[in-house]
Length: 97
Ligand SMILES: [Zn+2]
Image 1: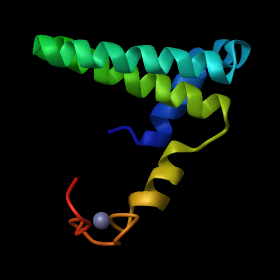
Image 2: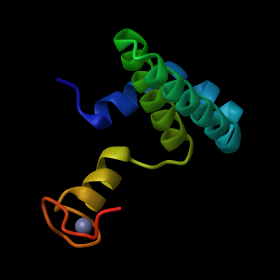
Image 3: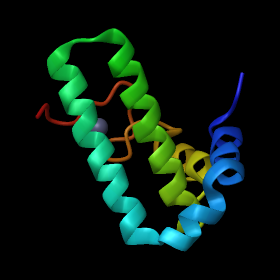
């Protein structure tokens, strides 16, 4: 079992130096490209592709968070750990959109 923080640290170990050299907006552009590839995998309904693209999106999200010095685990739990950030409920009771 690996925590979000551990995985983000793993991405820092593997790619941290390159991510810093590339910079925030170029890393963001890669993240957006991977999100596009996720959409393509959804259309193709290929299980293996889907898993790979989810992994790539998450890896690039971790890289971007590393460049911007954001702890994804801390940020995510702070925002969603107690339920919906808007209504505070689990499950959310906000108007369905
Ligand atoms: Zn809500």
